Length: 361
Length: 273
View 1 (tube, each protein chain N blue to C red):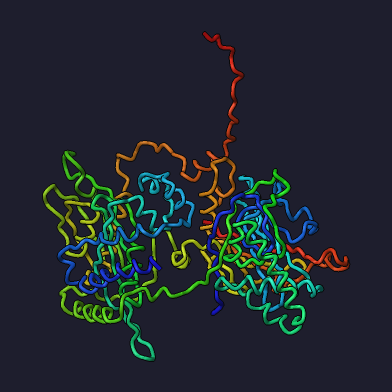
View 2: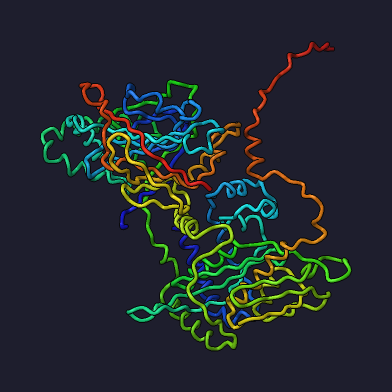
């Protein structure tokens, strides 16, 4: 399709699994970082639909959309921590939290920090678009805001060394956040590590030696074919076949082997990499009725890393996961739920539930 | 990237083997050279079975065969069958007529085995020789099957031949294997002989029928025949099977058991001296 795919590769582990980051961080496990404390998520969205247990965070992905000019948008993938609900696909929930379009002024401040911080890492689109969209209008306040942001960043850098991860994960820091722990210690929490982005390069065909040796071997093969008395006749192209795996899975595995540590693949509006051919159709968005489109998929190395980090306790959810990939579809119009309109000042964050499809082993 | 550099080194050797493979095959060159390179790359398992194998919950591949679990990662086989050697049997160009001329791709046949009861066959088509060889080795490892060996007559020593007459078919070629007395050697054409050597069969009589000129089908028929050795019900298997829990089940049950909190008894009063 030509869409480029961004890969989420594992970065450093968090020192404390319950430490808070901000909603611009992309991480696996840990505690969900809601943009504001009183974000007003309905409690049923945070509970397992089968058993009612409070869900724990699997992945938090900062996913702005450049084309629609939405900068503050994060996707949270939650799962039920009990092992009974594990195999059931209904134990997973995906929430999309985004800022509604009404506020422009605060966006300006955010963008200054974006411009400065978000330039180190290779591929994330969020680093480029703030430059284009707000440069023209905010020229006068640029310097002051920039100076204050630089000061903030200086204090941040000296505060905690683990903020270094933000360079990798492309997460601009809005205000200094110390090592604030989550307030609810009874919440089950998965081991936490941060993510940095890479771009997928499909250069798999070029791993062979220099061209000269290739032409030599081609000629040799032709000679060999004529020399031997046994001619292997009647051969034609044959698709890959293995006893335990079908073609789709072999292709899936081949893409995984190119980047064996990829935890998730992000491609807004692209095509997912399927592990099996029986993919269900995604349903339409519950809020606005627009069709859903593919956005990202979680891959099995993620469950391997979480499994490795387990402390051996029983009833640890990732030990029971058998999924190969989790495909996440989001509303193609990025609608905002109607509840966020009307309250002034307070609520400009919209929370919507999106669809997740599980492909099992 | 380091791994790419390593692969280039490996494929330098692969090229030589691919190109001269046809002529050099009669020398019976074994391909165990890839071993050290593969160990450098760390394997991140994709499937649940892969995770269990990586942890070391299996010692032999027979435990996987017992439960008929599909093996989807070739690293599983590499870990569980340590002495696996591979050999390229043939690389043929395969052509397709297009408007712009002919498009040639290469088809590689690779057989892997440990000369002791496990053998696999892989066939891969690709635009480059090295890619085809590498892909065929992976497919061959994915299709490793156990081979049952038995005796011709007296049950002295180790099994050396097939346990009974078996036949395998692919396309128009059928291959029939008949138990042979010790010392007969493998009585077969050159191509299936290699597969039988990799399987660890020492003596066998074979007979084939059909268009054995199509050596691709011939070698696949031999492989199919070897797969059937364990499918044949003999009186040894008449005893009722004692069912063992599948490794996934065993593992889940272990986790589902509530772990007892460590109960420390109240210290009994000890009379201390």
